[in-house]
Length: 233
Image: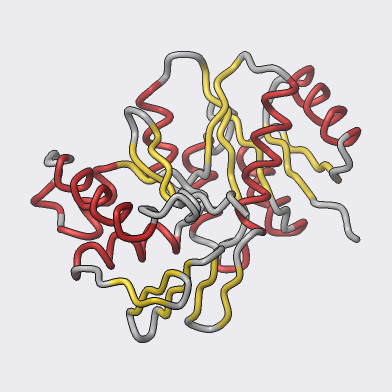
């Protein structure tokens, strides 16, 4: 089985060395870059499964690198974990808005780093999607028919509930802020009315997670938003 390839992007040599060493020990193949321009170039050449991306790097900063990666069709399945300085909450939220899958606050422990890397890669690889059919545990979604099933029983969702679940699934593993969900499902004029999202998430959960036997698909990220997290199976 081929090694998972991870691109580490940071301009602090000792951090790159520490991360690379421990990722290699854990069985990953590691490539590195010390600036944004090289990061984009290497990502296009190496096509890593995951990028550990520091925000404050020379050339293109981490935000611009993230936009470049997310705008490249060949890299659409590449996961991104942003490395942020302690207390930079706005940076974290902006990074998530641009398409990052997760973030780690510096300073971090090696154990936390490896756990986050493993979790993100596992989320990417634990679902099956063939054509317009998505399957995760006992949940099945037919995007073409806009049909949702739990254990082969049809679930009745309202239009907005379906659209909200749809966007969470198609961005599975990524943390989506409440404002992002409002913009994409209800429109920009609803920005700021985050209670709308919370109420609809609660209704969706009752319909697909009410049974104790059902996985808890939708994860609340306190103070930020939600993500579809198919880790239960």
